[in-house]
Image (cartoon, rainbow, N blue to C red; front, top):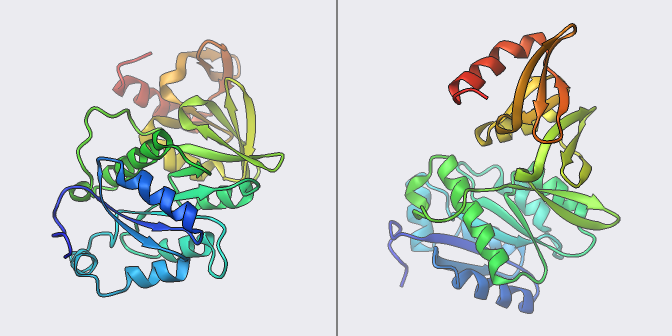
Length: 273
């Protein structure tokens, strides 16, 4: 019997062509108290068929203009239609489900492309329960941010969403938390993320990160720089114009004239430095 569509809790589609991977994913998802229903699919084609099928609950959600499922947790590498190709189809759904990918060794390039498609997390295989729970929290935060509060359980006690950025390092995928980024510098069609541990080049334009991270407090100060406003400790006026000082590093970054007024307004709105 299908559960009524307005019952609290997430409805999740789990996609993996390997039985062991699927069993573990379903087990981890069902163990999370905010997940109400898990729908398994053993390849991407079956997953899309499930979304377009005659399941009573999914049909009701589709007719109500809601995401057919709240989230899709999927393996990246699958025979036939890959997880990446499925993600491109899902991106056309309005509204589209939140994407979380399960990644294996050597799938860094795919993970970076998946980030471009809006994936909110990348879970390395095999995933433990804590890692899965953090991914579910990112799904909930994304649903709230998109205004789909009717589909998102209330989790007031959970930590705030901290998006991760996949970075390719020597054939491995390293996940960089957004909260560790001190500033971002444009490098052509790429961006370099500066963290407390070093810097990482990602295949994402600065303008895309600006739009995606605006609600997280990142502000454009220059055509080449994006910074989290909470890390700005000083706004200085010198002979060449304004500069900001970032955190304990006392790193100075230029502020362009066209961004100065907006930056000052943002600083005033947050109560000053």
